Length: 288
Image 1 (cartoon, helix red, strand yellow):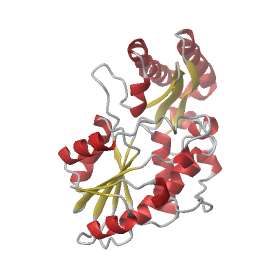
Image 2 (spheres, rainbow, N blue to C red):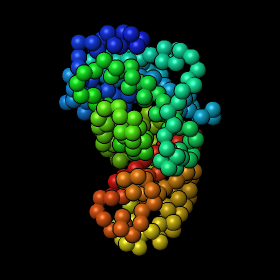
Image 3 (cartoon, rainbow, N blue to C red):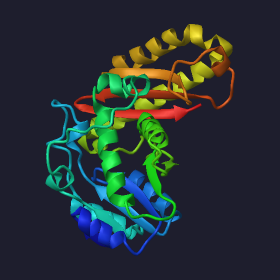
Image 4 (cartoon, helix red, strand yellow):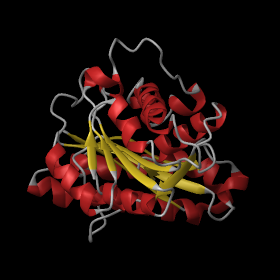
């Protein structure tokens, strides 16, 4: 496995290949990331991962400075999983000057849910991912694949639309959310949790499961009862000491509120949630 730190060295390493499969990460890797790498193994002729903590997607009050940087351990995990090339650029390499050109996703998708509570987040994500795509795929002559986890459900949808609308010619492949034995969605930020918080963290997924059950039970009446179901779920988490941002039921197709037709269709909805436990903000989702 090659570890490269410049765009020139990355392109030189990829020059013998025609069809990269790419897994962008911010490092501090866990089994969820490695599952994405395993998914990439069956695609294309060279497997690439990037490790870059992207300042553009962090608000001033968020954890950019303290986000764990574990490059050596990450590279060992990626090599064991069959990665061929790791691109780990410095901030100066990827942003040689202040990034004035930004990729702005449509407000209808980017300013709801995560985008509402983290203004500018998806602009930062789209800008860095489009730049990473340019670095990795510039010389590719065959099929191009990028693998993203479904735990970041809205992010994956935003990136699919970006690739489609900008005619990038990249296939976005979704990797299923990986969970611990007791059901907690794997996340780099789980490392921030204390032992007691780790035990409590499972209740985000349990509350979403209950919300999904109630949504299915509501059937065609769901649109009229949705606000009450969501309020009950929010209250349940709040009573346990959480500070929830949202717990909601949305259409899988566009993350808008469901209507009666959506509510009675099987496999058309998703429940999504974000909540803060102590100082750690966790997200999760379940398709229903």
